[in-house]
Length: 323
Image (cartoon, rainbow, N blue to C red):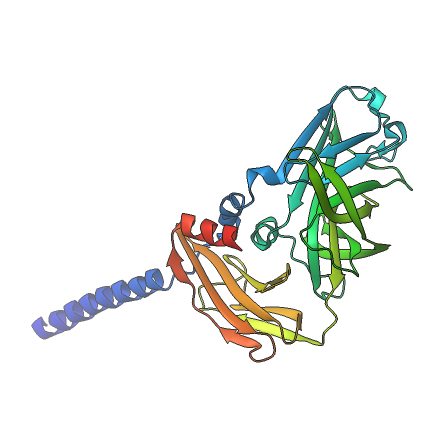
């Protein structure tokens, strides 16, 4: 009987130790919490405050040129027959006691990444080289406006060097899936020159005819042959807590690679061959930010394995501002 009691005691203690070991393994391999939404506050700090300008009006307004802090210009003409509400009904400016026009200008690749408007076309995902992006929002008494059918807004974007072949593209946003890419309007962008007041002089750039409010892009297609490009990260990084970008050297172009919640591989289907790029990975797990930037050329290496390194929040912001 004494021996039997010792056996029972041994089995009981063994069960306790085994249970403790299993519990420890569960804690050690606990999956990462989805934190990609935590990247939002970080990315909001990347665009310069001067990249967004706000203009307020009350009642009827004449034909007006809005000059933003970044030097872009927006022309409002025939404002009594320019805007409509969400139902399509006309909203003359004279009937709007509080009209607000907001204009955001995106001229840096880091801003493109931060705002989530990578420069690929919709729906074929072919890449675009951008000369500049603007977003125009209009509200009447806090309610969103759109352009009436057939109306447009003329926009001028400053540029140091003006290149031929630029076109106008509009941003496509799905209410559920979010940013989809840029759709061609079939309209060319034109070279323009306008006077500067302070200091006096002339500014050159592009002139766009924007057929809708929202995002407009002055860009041209990259026509080279393309290939899928994929990046594999360590297992703890998925689309729930990481974002992966191709940041093109020497031109203003950014592609965002897509992943899913079940794996750690991110891919872009139409990476143009022969272009030098920085592959940039941003992530956040718990309270820790992660980042890696790796230089390569599309075509010489279309499948990369990268390991993000711990970074302070301000380091990530400074890096994105430098792009």
